Amino acid sequence: VISLWEGDFMNRANADIRNAVATNGFRLWELAAALGINDGNLSRKLRTELPAAEREHILTVIAEMRSTQDREVKANANR
Picture 1 (cartoon, rainbow, N blue to C red):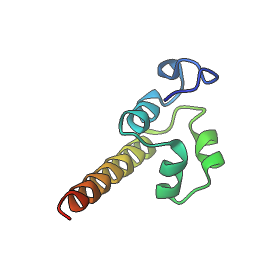
Picture 2 (cartoon, one colour; picture 1 turned 135 degrees about the vertical axis):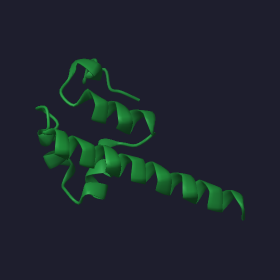
Picture 3 (cartoon, rainbow, N blue to C red; picture 1 turned 180 degrees about the vertical axis):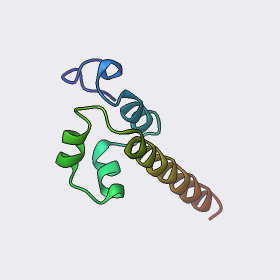
């Protein structure tokens, strides 16, 4: 769910990262925790376009979060 306060995030900096977080059912604070940084610092980083290497690292972390979530769901379904 995207807050109306935030507006259309597709026109914002790092829209691909924001979209990946949202479409995978995560919140930015969860991504920040996975990155080992404060959620405020992540929000500040996302205000301007990130370098390609940092963008790829963050997208990889999101993919790992999704993979972990899928494994947990599968493990719970087998109980």
